[in-house]
Image 1 (cartoon, rainbow, N blue to C red):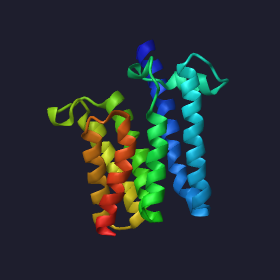
Image 2 (tube, helix red, strand yellow):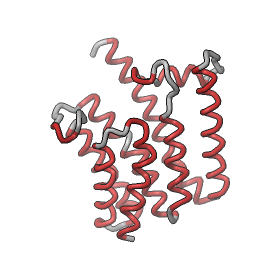
Image 3 (cartoon, helix red, strand yellow):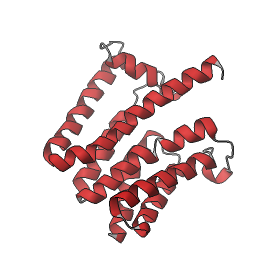
Image 4 (cartoon, helix red, strand yellow):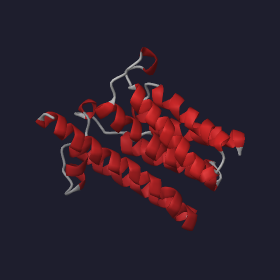
Length: 195
């Protein structure tokens, strides 16, 4: 593996570790929904402020260096929106859906948006036109992990299949960072239809 590829892998792994941390939200919400929602709002506001300062050329210790180390090429020279949409996606799921459905929707966001990128970017070889540049391997891995996490939440395969399929449909759309908003909403709506 080349030095550039190793650097890209390291950056993407760190980025997805941060993304996966959103999976802690359902556990926190089980203890205190209001404070978890407040924590998400404060996190979104804090990140937005820190990223605005970084974008304007000011560096905050630790925060700016972490943000800079996980930027993708398309994010250079612009506000990195992903963490904002990630926070709002989890917040909307918490506020719109009953707790089990919100948990499944947030797990779909955490795992269904991370696993396809990691598998597809580094192991994906088959890229059919239908998937708009995404790999078949990553897309199937994303479907599988969302199906599995949803099955663990609902203990029912039809609901898990619906949540997995909704996540699959969102994953193949060219949404950029806005998939973080649409994915948990689509997953939650799909679960509502079966629960």
